[in-house]
Length: 291
Image (cartoon, rainbow, N blue to C red; front, side, top):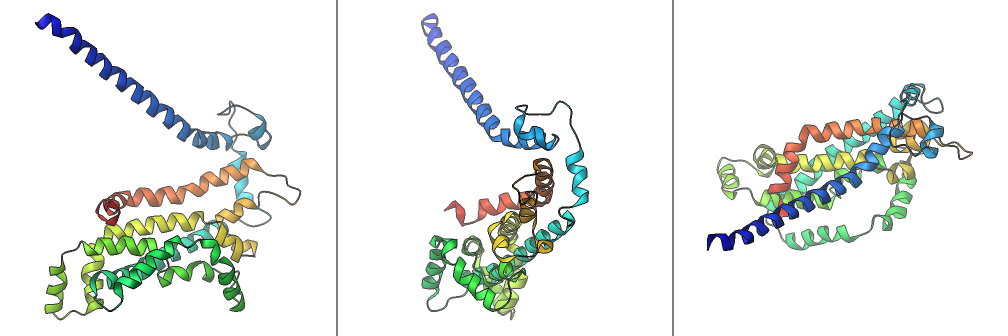
């Protein structure tokens, strides 16, 4: 009986090993597809501009540093540090606006009972279905009439008015999971809504707040459409618009410096993400995104 069943066990083991091999090969193939653009960009940053498009080599045989050293000369007389500073100002103000306004709005929806709360919350969630381009022209006309174009005000004003419905929803779902006994204890101690929000709810909502901050920072840093519409002076350009300046009026592009600056522009985003990735995972795991 033992010898009769042995081939069956052996066949099942072979099937498991074959399935494991197929799974790992498929995973490596997908990883190669995902990493190929990254490797290409890194390799292209060390190639002369004339070889980036013409050469089929993924990595250069003789790396050159001219693309990175050339960034110190700036673009059209403008230092690239100004682009990074403008992007940093935009991203920091966007993060501050989203964290303050979204957390206050979320506290009102999650902790305060008032007439029409569910209706207003539903309307806010409904704004997620509204395309950004529908409001683009009215917003531009409004800010132009207020003479606020060519400034960061049109880009960050909405962040301080809780217009980011996704982050409000994220914080609402997180705050609803906090024990209501904490609110009742604070009320017995004489705390009002603002004191309860600032001293109790806000510190406990740190994972959701940092999650919102990370996504806001990345979105603001990579934003191209907003600065393209509202910023007109090259000295006020962000990094995304600064990359566009590597192409001159005759359509000739300095691909080497453009790709080198693209890699440098990734450093702040990666650093910000690595610094707060633990809170990002905690926030996604404990927020309303889980259902």
